[in-house]
Length: 329
Image 1 (cartoon, rainbow, N blue to C red):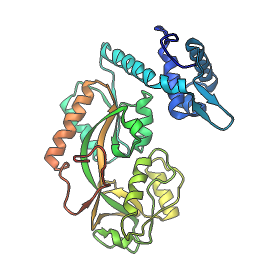
Image 2 (image 1 turned 135 degrees about the vertical axis):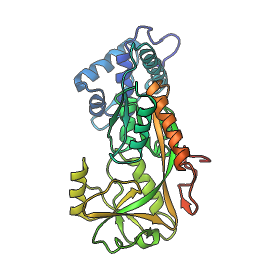
Image 3 (image 1 turned 90 degrees about the vertical axis):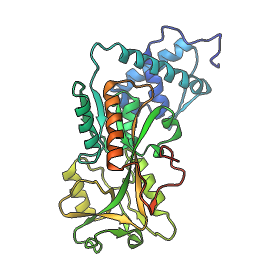
Image 4 (image 1 turned 180 degrees about the vertical axis):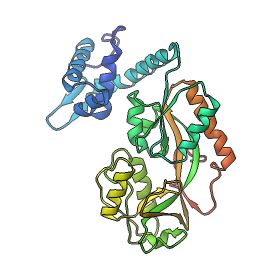
């Protein structure tokens, strides 16, 4: 049965049910959706069944191996998202005091720290709280679930369906680098031409579902004409500087990084050149979000970008062709 005028969404449908439906529709996995919403899987299944009864439709096809949307589920999804966006906007508009803005900085020590500090200087009355999610793909899941507000990263590396639910402001072209064990053959060079990495295996987050946009950027870079650079296989997810250092010392693969990557004991960071590969960094937030802290963050990013030349693309640089979210992309 299709949703139509005869079977309309009740005006008093609990937004919690729509939020449960949207989480399952996006994850296509009840366990992951329950974890995202911090509810028991049994409670989530109960909410989905209740919504199906209210609408008198089946929203999902469930088998032992997969979950898929029915045509009715596909049709409901954009309506549910619009209702939830309006509900969130109403909640935000009538807070007596602006709630803290939760800002994901990915990794401590990157230039995002400077943007946050400047935003706090511009709006000292606002509470901007730092979080560390390690990658934009992971942060976006938290943003759309309402557990984060803002993150930084490669907006163009997200799926179009996700970008449609987000807003972004381009922040900077960030030159890329390679993190090498200090006894590596290339560690003595002041900068590393890409051609010198031919035959090397570089770690770029393969297998980490929080950093898929970064791994995709690496794959595109390594596939350049005659480069012959290989993506190293997945390694255990390292959380924190000490674990990252331990895993790197164990596997000894060079790591694709950016020039602003924080110092790592036992390693050296060398800029990549010929050409200079660029990581396009954007500020990313949920479409429709309104918060004075976000205004301060956007203004701080624009101010620093102008002052530091972050928006000027260096000569002899590389960027994925047709990259969404960058000037001229």
